[in-house]
Image (cartoon, one colour):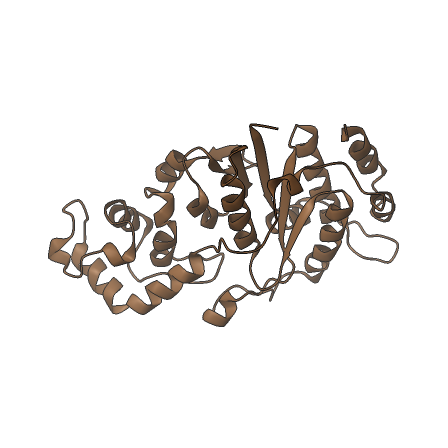
Length: 292
């Protein structure tokens, strides 16, 4: 099967998205199920549209090793329990639907997506890997037109040129860029005085923090406000390195043995039971019809 495309889906993003988009719906025991049903239907529609090889990453636990590195890093605090309680349900239902799932505990869903993308792209048979998430952290994984980022909701496909166009820096500089501008979604503030414009000016000249000259006089002439930026960066140097570590996705998470493991081969027999519980008979019909 040459020219296969691999679809890697950010299940955490999808579950959040549907939780806030669909009306409340509960099963017989009072467990909220609306978002799970939304995500399953969404993944099913990808299969119906021709996706053959899929994997879904979820944050089984919101906290990760990054919380040990930085106190302010995002936690599950303030997340609606009706949303959190749907993660294990989603993981179980996707598995029953025949889709490979990576429930993350020590790492984050982003780390699983990054690891799966790197591993899939190493297979010569793979033509393209689509990381399906709008999360800007994942821009760092983009490679040429081979590993791309796809925001399904807004139908935006971003290859390497697209990352440069959006951020003003190459994919490899995204962690450095996020380190200084900060990432409110992940909960770290960045470096004082560094906005997106300044960061783009600096990292389009210097790929990484370490490449930036210690003496601001030596900075590239295109960079405005070199002196205050330099003073702020080098006085907050350890923070910058820490924030970059937080913003760097891991590519060494064990996700699959072979891309063939990602091939969808139809629902498992327990999917019927899952669909009953989720009150989703149409989903079962669609899954059975899609299996060729």
